[in-house]
Image 1: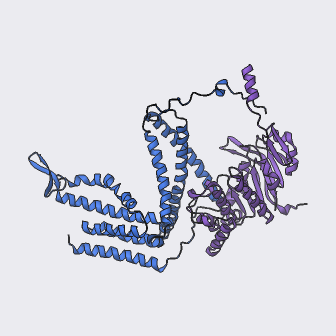
Image 2: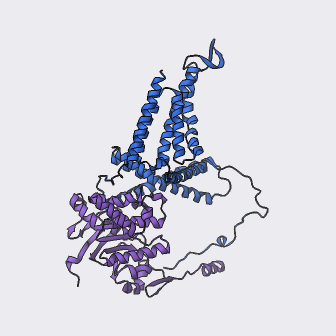
Image 3: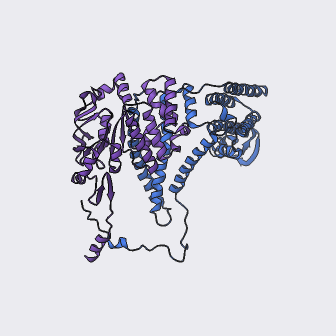
Length: 277
Length: 308
């Protein structure tokens, strides 16, 4: 039975809307425990990325509270240098758009950006950067500029730029989206390895195929920006009606164990109907 | 949810395509939009090429960027103070030698410098060569005007020649630096020379995202071209496209800048720019900087010795 001390991140009844008009989260609650892999599931625009931004202290709720490692995370608290360093050092965010995350003139400087802001000694920064480059097999990219990198390489650099800070919690926004199969497989294995090494993982996805590997627990968002389901991947995948309601599967999708399988029902029968009509 | 989409009949019928008699249509040159976009992608390719050149193992590529920058500054000051064309030509010959030693293609190097000088400097200095601006001995007469002989004067031509060669030497020096130094190391060198870090950060980001946004523009144009039937030479529709894509790009860059800022905050950025320490300078870097300063002083010495 997990204790309250294991609750690393606690989002309580949080609502958020963009520009005060476009609702993104509606009374959402989430507790992330130490060492688990949590997946936030939902269709496009349901609010899962916004929740990750709340969890990373990048946007702040209109109502409700968010506590991380026992302290409330507010805009005001994050202005405190010590709190900011402590929080940013413990929570890492890998954005969906690697182009936004890889902003430095070279890969080496990109990796050094986080540790420099954490105020680590120069020698340690250099050692960490070198180790991370080797760990992710991107030594040969160290002096390259971002525009010289492929999509997969940018993703590796983005992950390296966060891992080099050695955060306890890693947030991934759509980690496997727009990656080729080899990079996708590599990333899935990396996430599992990091979790086995003690890192807590929170990821937002609508890719049901990878759930069995990437998550211990899933939370399902409705298109009305609320959490409407929670459970282990196998339990949730068995709830066909729920997945249909939240637009995670189509009625032509078939679930084989943990694998979602889509049959494309072509235009032909509609065409026949139109022609006949 | 069941899809109610039905395909209209016209979608299922083939479109009239290429006439079996082949290419007999009229041909037109591309519009100004096409030329601008291809210019932009040419810039991208050139930047990639520059990085390849900077990775070569020539003379200048081995020198630490800070030493290169210091040496260049010294020579630039000297070039700005020199008052004799032969001295400037000697300096120019020196830049050609260094370019060759740095394994740069001499034809590319010379073209890069001289293609722009006639356009920019030439037009500016041209009036100074005429007798009604610079009085003196007319060597290229144009005739008489209100009883006065007009034409190009030797004094005017000398002054124009001095400015053109000075600009050529200065540009050659800067091109030498930029072609042999990767952009990120050049930025680090600027930081080391006490340029404000925030300024360098903004410069670095602008350069980094120019590539991103340029490829977005190219994609937009390619998408438009793929749906353009016939020759695309209409300037009005071209202007409309430029205005629409400028708007789209503004929105895109705004959203991107917000995302980049969030990515920076997520990694502990609080407004203070911190950077990794540049590599230590080796003895040869110091020697290079000293050699450049000595060359600059020698140039000035020779120039003074030649008198006014």
